[in-house]
Length: 420
Image 1 (cartoon, rainbow, N blue to C red):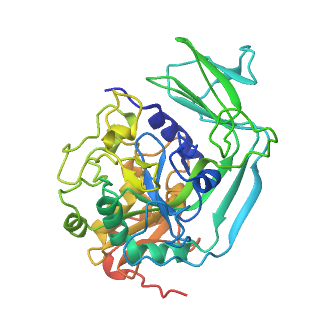
Image 2: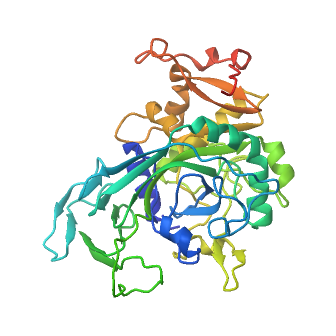
């Protein structure tokens, strides 16, 4: 079974700790123009698809009556959050910028295109992201408010996505965006089992491998959806979302199963996460135990009359050989599963993208045993409103070189913070 290049891209860029790298940063053209113009943003609730795209469902800061954004509807009983402060860095990634994985050994090519690279080695995985116009970054300041709101509504969100929208989102796959990096143009290259190139609006790029050269060109995004620029061109919007930061949410299996008919297999219990990292084995429905594996998530589209429709797993990828049940490994999947295992009184586990960074500080992504094994050194579990999450230990207690055994992380010593 062929491996989607997004898996290589994810494994190689996750350790850079900018957030989850989206292999498809561009908004899909079936969304309303207003949603396309802003791209994936803070407050979006959805799923990271196995092909590396973000599947939008609804936005928690937008009223349910605003169908230009919440075009697929909202969960029953939905009430929007009041938007708080957002911290913005207009030049987080300078113009131009490049991010290359530790394994990337690339040289400028003589391909005669605006930006090109010749990958001199294809014996190991590597990935590269170029941002010719730079990129901005933005983050919601009070993420604890989003966390509390997400814990309260996690079950209804899964019920909405898998029921009303007809999706098969696995338990643990729900993602709430609290921050992102966006650009107007980008280029992506990966080298692995299958070498690949992507390029964004108005940007030509070329990467060549020992097996040949792949070039893809695309044009700037315009509100009219056309490929040609308008007569009076304006500055293109920064609607190409390169990285997302946010919360992943998992609910207790029995509660999730009660919502699903037929049952949907959870994202992971990670019978062997090392095999996922190496991609030597397929992560598929029914492998391992009763809660291992992942289920396909249908894509969404907007019909001509303005109503929404969600389609089946065939829309996950343009690669017919890609197994739709195989998804890139995410450290938060292991963390959330472990939190629920260790805290039987909790009904929801929620972890932020930044939580795992201290657990895997190197240039490559650590395996599950290393990440979970370091939890007690850096965090204590806390419960609020039936949801369990991580709280950082005081610096003096977080021993850098001496790990605290997980046996010393008992569930009966949990903190129960009061929401301020």
